[in-house]
Image 1 (spheres, rainbow, N blue to C red):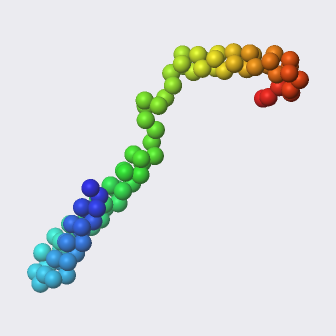
Image 2: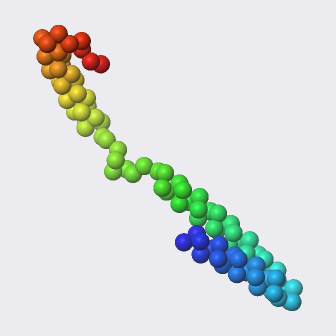
Image 3: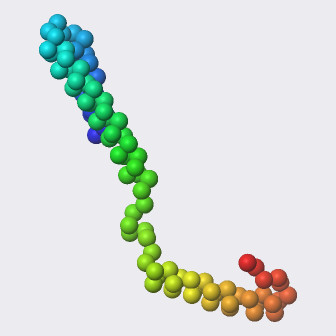
Length: 91
C-alpha cells in the first residue's frame, strides 16, 4: 500500500512539471508532498508492525512457573544418573 502513495506523488510531480497554471502547480506540489509523507509513514508503520511481537506468543505467569518446575525436575532427575556414571554434572 505505501508504494501506491509513492506512485501518486510521482504522478503529481509529473502533472506539476507539465502544467502551465500556477494554481494547478501549487495543488500538485502539495499533493506530491503529502504523498511522499504518507509513503514514508506507511513504510515506517510496516517496519514497526513486522518487528513487534504477537501477544499470543507471551507466556502467562502460571505457565512460566510450570515450565520452570519441569526444568528443575528434569535437572534433579539427571543429576543422580550423571553421578552414578561418573560424569561431571552439566549446567
